Image 1 (cartoon, rainbow, N blue to C red):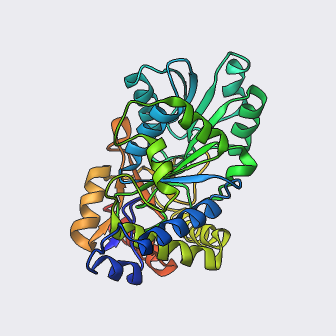
Image 2: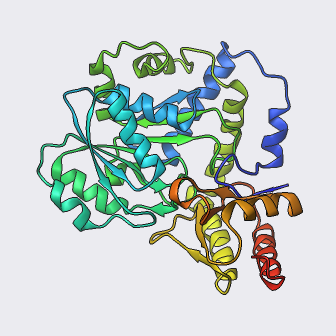
Length: 357
């Protein structure tokens, strides 16, 4: 089986084997020490400012998105959300569910965020800015320098979902003035699904402390308090946190830049190989994590996805909504080699020669 989706992804053999071990008890000093080390390494990996804290949340990325909205904002806030696809729309929906005023900057499928998109919102009393730095549903990577400049000028709290971009594209939390960033386990971290991580700078921690949230499981203040001793308030996905420790050590040994460069090189190989096929890259600004493709040949997206699965035991991502039958997404994250990536492009070429694609 070859998995070219955007998550869960192919995993390193050593990390996989760790998941087959008996799950250890976690209310111990050994586990506390491991978690304190995890916090230090995660903060380093996103380039957080000194004094930043990490919330280890046993939840999907959407759970972390909702928990972040609940803990950082109140009905006194006025939020600006970038809605460039399914996950931007999800951020907006979460705000609506919790009664927090949020206006959306809506972008067409595959379109990058530009300066003129933000001009109408300058000086309009917004208190925070929410963005999925890589809109996973369309493959668009947004310009964080542009976002950072806008937020600084307008004195906005900046919450970033970097779930599908982290370790695929460079991320500079302190440099960009990001106050809180969300990461999940099953993307380029290449771990089992189930854990999400919210890195909060000092300003974000102040918002958490002042929130007075009437919540049990999603109360970040409890996570920060328990995190001081290297624990979580409730039972976490213990095995995944052990795997996280090993994976972060691997990443930091070679450097985050090297990890991003590897993904970029694999993505470039694939994009070069498919240039003369009836497949069109549909993003104005691609992340290294995934190549979104508009199908211009005979096959509909669902047919192509089934064909790859049934004939080659290969998985690629579908799309949703209006793009369901016209687009697919090919991921480049996880334990994937250049040779494996080229195998997929070779299959596409063979399909095209046979008149199937």
